[in-house]
Image (cartoon, rainbow, N blue to C red):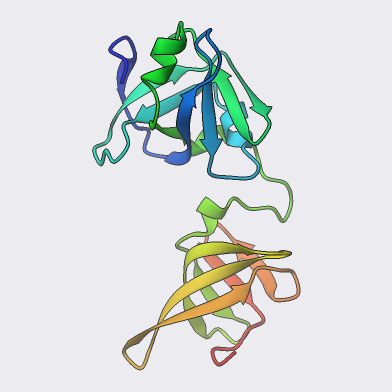
Length: 184
């Protein structure tokens, strides 16, 4: 990392949203590969937190973002803390985190995937189907991947995350209610 960057602790609500791929141009801009097809969190936050690749500790560096914009298949960004190409090259491979609190507000019936992970899923009859482990983008729809226990054995379930099957998402209660049966 750059010695001129300010050391900082990751915020408690920090979410990894991208990785710095390389320098871009000669004036200190850098190329960022977002983990999402819609990288609004990168654009809405004017402070990013960087961690070296593979770092497990909470320590990070704070980077004040001057500008971030879409360019081709990635995002390019600049910071006053990164004055030239050499400084931008030193960022290569850094993991980019932003505070969850700086994400744009989701619209009605829209959810950030990160908010769904860990939620319990029950059907209309109140039968527990599992806990959301991850989400998969599978063509025209997103699928919830659930971890569950059945007869003392781990079971994986998949439920399409579409209005035909999802009755309610209650983020404060950390619960998703679906029209789905355990044997589907």
